Image 1 (spheres, rainbow, N blue to C red):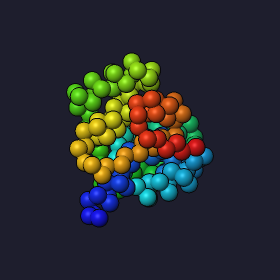
Image 2: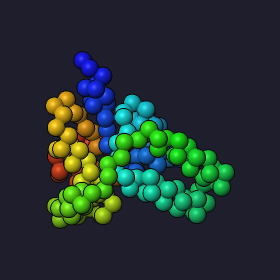
Image 3: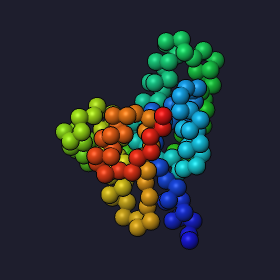
Length: 154
């Protein structure tokens, strides 16, 4: 078995809801961290912005100290160097519109789902095994409806 096929099987698409659990203590954080260590990280190009937004909201709510927030952002920047991010193209946006019509999910969730479907269907790699990892129940159900294999972090 070649390294390329092995890496392809270890690939997972991570939604931001799971990624944030890597940096904060909350329900499902240990499970998210284990999956993030076990799989090659793939997500949408919107993920870093979405993660900073989620962390900033936690900082504003007082859930993160300034020091913790700054340390998390520094770690996020270091981790980002190892991520594969799917570019948000017009094709992804077109597919996201279809995802919204079919599932009723919100815009950013639709972009994530469309990105994962695009990778899954457009990869052309016979050994590709892509798992969509999310902590969002609505997104989980939508991903199943779209025919993705889903791992729900709870």
